Picture 1 (cartoon, rainbow, N blue to C red):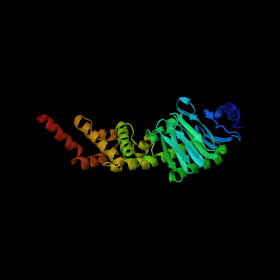
Picture 2: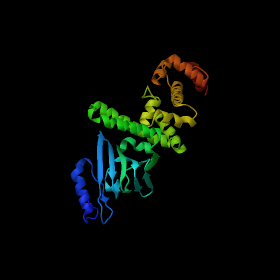
Picture 3: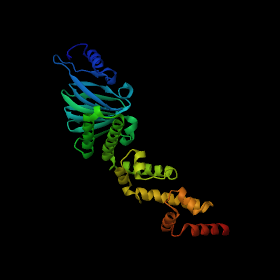
Picture 4: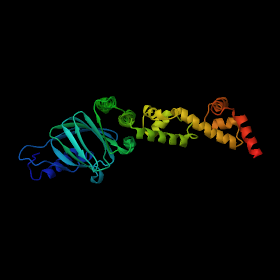
Length: 310
């Protein structure tokens, strides 16, 4: 469409709606005022259920997205620039996303954007509730294309794009889940070395352990990491500065809670061992003695004797 048309912004919106329909709602856009030339935009979108991937080409344009504008406000957006540049500005942040860079941003807040003439990019739109936690309260995060985590994600998306029309519903759900997990891995790979993040993740993991000591017999790194939406590797790295490994911490807390019950109830050793998810009573006794210096029964008798004398 001609950029010099006085009604160019209205024409752009009308043409966008005609070509894209309801599946790809336009953000509020404005074209630069030129005496000659035209504006071209091309967007090819593929959907992995609610995970959208767009191959975009755009001439110079500006606009707003997210927040009170309401455009894709329920999404986390990732812009991977192949050629040209995107520029984003919020109340707090400014980013220039040139070729070779990837910007991940929370679209729940309003952003102003500008696109350079002839910009080619890949845009990922992900459900915010699935990946918001991995941003760790950050509004945006910039990384380079050429990290292992980014390359792995892009490779998965290329493979999926080539096979998407042949996938069964079950395979499509699996591809979507794998894509989200790889995206979380990309985010976690960027922030896990942040001391504040690692400490916060370790605390969150400990709270998860405390809540599930009794209810989850298979409590371990895999289930804890899944609950916190991080990789197992990230979880282990966050525990690097703690006194114990993840499973060491789980066992420590189960032993302490089991001992408290042993000394304050009439439950048998076998009952307590089973309730706190030890393999059997002999395993519980051996682990208990190693931790507290005595077997459960003598330890209970000694505690009861002390109470009687008091």
